[in-house]
Length: 334
Image 1 (cartoon, one colour):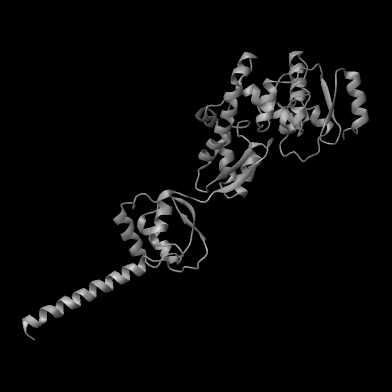
Image 2 (cartoon, one colour):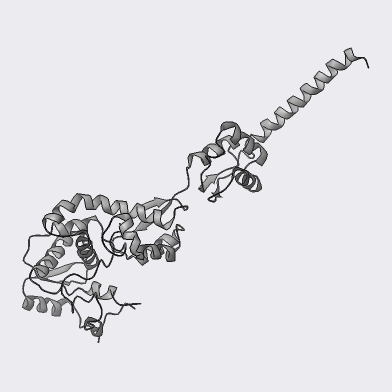
């Protein structure tokens, strides 16, 4: 073949090769299955672009790991892919998938933390939601360094883990989760701190008394009244005599509060035997209970007893209180 005829042929072969490569690349960057459903995809901390691309191909979310790597480098986002849990689908193009991974639009999970849970109970709910290990969160909450790190008073985080409904991703550390809860507490504390200071109440005292109010009633309208009762008793030097404080100080409490428990002077949380506030919060109170402590009802009540319907009857004198106890309560077990 003459050189003159060979040149057009070589050009044609090269054009076909380029066209073929272009078609292959176009196919590699197209969605793998347009009708695919979303699936969960985890990017562990410390993942490289190559490992992410290979996992995408292995999970049949993209057609070519090599094409994903090439596209990420071309866009200059190879170092921007963020760890976390994502909802991805093979109906998305590799470009769309890279956009999601670079944006950090991770899946979040709802966890409901009602008012009045202890740190241990909160940890159990966080674990049930798949957000952290309960043991790790409890260890953080009980670490004496944690309170100082988050800017609250006391040796633990009990009382400051704010109850609310949260949505969180699964890649947060226990410390990051605690930070979210603590920020909500501090938001409410900033609203009431001036009132607390004017009354000579510290953050820890407010959180402690609010936790008792929280455990004593689930009726919102009663919180200022119960806070008023306890504030009155403290002002008169009377013991608080609160069952929930005693229960908090009983290891492995089985749900049956007995007279022997009420007589146990070794329990530091036994407010039947010890004057003043207990050593610290017994639960994690919500905003209404915190506000009730610094804005209690203006009342001269000193006692209250459950009506057994979620509400309480209040009284000013011990005689009246005894009559109410006899009317509404059975005798305690021994």
